[in-house]
Length: 225
Image (cartoon, rainbow, N blue to C red):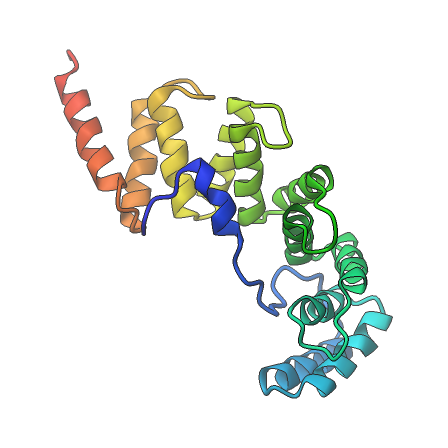
């Protein structure tokens, strides 16, 4: 995996959001059956049936259906896509506790996909999603504090969120928190922890991490015992 520096994370966020039901609140059996049918219709390219299924569930305030319907609007997969309606659906899904919707709402607000950019509101939703366990949102928060984008520069807060994302399995975040431990940036300098995170990043495929491991091992070997 090619290593991304903090300033490059914004580009990394611009990934297509799938019609996933991950991180959704639990559904009852009947609602789950309806949702599965709508998802199968979508995957088969039967957009009118998918729309009808999602709209019926969205009328019942099912967050994952609200999210999926919003995505169809944003992707232009409906005859008259409506960004304003998409924003309302995403907001309802996010308020309903669907973490994927919380992150996508934040991302869309930041990128101006739902109207004028609103970085302040985007960061509020990034934080909600980050607290709920979204690794992508944790990276967004870490980067906001690292760069001072919509937040005051705060290396300690940046390190806190990058560490959470690293614990969640993100390889780039592993490298970044390792670098912060190596330099003592936002955290006490700790070459042992730096090596620990560089090692995990290397095992995950980060291209720069093996070189940092060799460099750290040489530095530690040269230290007086």
